[in-house]
Length: 187
Image (cartoon, rainbow, N blue to C red):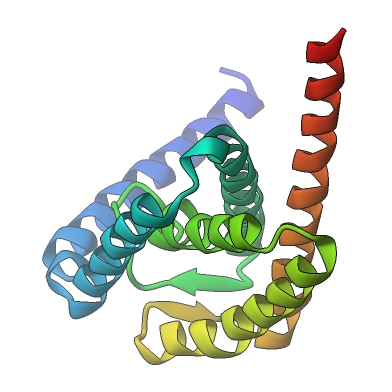
């Protein structure tokens, strides 16, 4: 067996031990915590709110925008989690290391509603600044207070420009893709 295979076997064994420990912790502690149930309820409520208010004539566009937000937020979260910038005490499922409710449900829905209701760039940018401030300086501290999110080498102020840039970049990308799509359809 090569050194590479032997070394990787060691890593795989550690990952197995970690997965088992994470599952036991999730079943015995997290699943019965108020934080788990609260975040689950907020996800369901946010989904119901979105279903009630979504502009069905723009469903594909909104889902594209929300998907880009989800991909960006999960990817950035994976980097931050892997580099120990933050950690989570509550997980949707034991197999997922991040706070999945936020990145798969709540954030994309908030971003999609902002995108839907603030069409022009000026009002959208103002709404994004307000959301970025609320996300960074209200929601994150609330998650810390709830003991669901732990900042290790991260500060709230770092999140503000990221939340803002994600929303603006995703809108720019979607508008560009729609423009390309419309020009192809017209040909």
